[in-house]
Length: 90
Image (cartoon, rainbow, N blue to C red; front, side):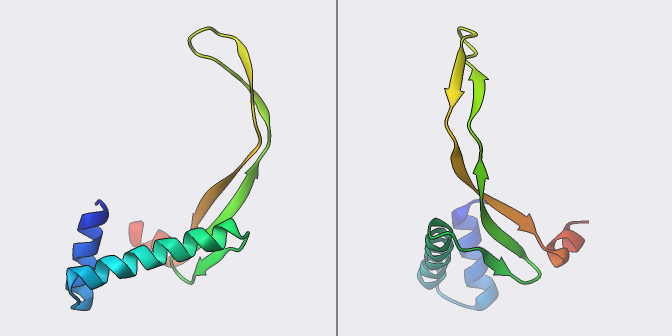
């Protein structure tokens, strides 16, 4: 399912026009991104939790030359599925 499919599913499920469903989806992704940028966790009870995790600096290898390179530390977004979502999938 891509973004357009998701917008159509939201529109039909909530009985909304596609333009309104698209704006709602954009608002949700913007709010989650902004919260993660400021270091907050976003928890949707039963669905899951969005967090930011720190990844330490490490050594890697250039696959073309085999040379060792330094990979800088970074923050990465993470999602942990909630119980209801896990049960729905299984």
